[in-house]
Image 1 (cartoon, rainbow over the protein chains, first blue to last red):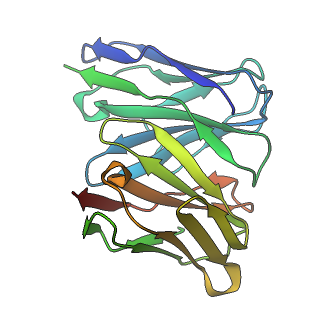
Image 2 (cartoon, one colour):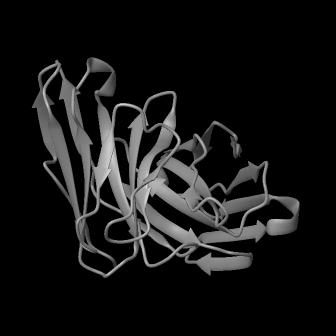
Length: 112
Length: 109
């Protein structure tokens, strides 16, 4: 099964600070995704990527940037963290479009 | 945007009973994936099912693309089946995997 590793697993950040969430996958998947999960909203897509150098806006991109410097790595960047960005963030990868997607274990972010 | 509706929102069973979970979506798509999630846990892929019926142990997934629906059947439920079941249709036009809100299943001993 595909291995998707997220770091850190837990993070406490201060309002206005910069936060970077990292995701690494070792299965040479082209597509990678960042979601956030909140009670009452389910899983919502923030950014995704089709390969190294590509980033696409998902359904809720405001306040987030993404970076895909290599096939293996996909980062989510919060330049100015706000308490509303307190959530659990999941990274996922898939070989290509329309193939099975695999998730990391999640990062719990608290912005105080 | 694409809308995904799962039903029921929650379900309580006695161990041994069967469950049928439904997923309906409002736009055309190309495949469906079902996930299982424990509270506070990650998402585990149960089925990647572009169309038709697939089986895995006590689980069966059926997707009918033309009718924009998919179902997940759990037979002879066990307490360890408790958790949230999420469906995620995939739209190759947008490249997005969009999730329903899930069905919370509780299986009592």
